[in-house]
Image (cartoon, rainbow, N blue to C red; front, top):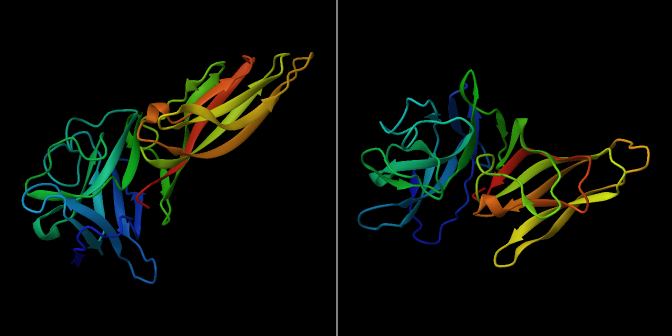
Length: 273
C-alpha cells in the first residue's frame, strides 16, 4: 500500500529497523509501532519525469536486503550505486522505487543527500538517506557491528577511535567523516589525560553557521601536580552534526598536556527519525 500526500507529508521514517544479516549484508525489517503491526513508512520523491519532486510515502511490510560486497556494483537494486566498496568509508542507505512505487529496494552511496549516479533501470523515486554504515577491513571488507533502535538511535558495538592523545592548544577539528552521517545527532566518548605538572583544561567546540566555532562545552578540567600524578577524566557527549562533517566538532587545551584527548564514536541518530 502506498500514499500520495502531495507536498504536506510527514518527512519522518517510521517502523524501520536495520540489522546485519552477515558481515556484508544489512536488512531493513518493518517493525510494529504506533499501534501498527510490522509496517514501515518511508517518504520518497520522484526524481525524474512528469511530477518530479512529488512526494509519496511507501508502506513496507516485507524485509529488504542490501548487499555491501565490493562486487555488487551498479547492476541492480539492493547494491552500491557506483564504484567499489572501500575500507574505512561511510555509506548512506536510500530506498528507491519504480513507477507507482513498485519494487522498493535499497541502494547505498558515498554521497548525500542523494546517490551519485547509476540508479538501476526504471527506478525513478528515492528517499532521503535513511541509514548509514561504516565499512572496515578485518581480513575482508565488513560492515561495522551496530544496534539500531526503533527511535532511530544507532549504537556501535565496538567504538571506533576518532582521535588519539590530541594536544592542540588552538581550535582543531576532530575528524567525523566516514564515522557519522551529515545532519545527525552524534554521541562521542572522550578521555582526557595528563601526567604533567601543568594545570590544563580541554574544551569541545561546536559550529554555528556564519559564526564559526564557539565554546560548546567543556569536557574536563585536569590539574597536574608536582608528582606528575596520572589524571584521567572520561565523559560522553551528544551534539548536532552539520552538513559539513569537517567543521562540526573542535577541541583545544589551555596548555598542552602530557597525555591528551582521545575520542571514540559511540552512535548517532539521523534527522529523518
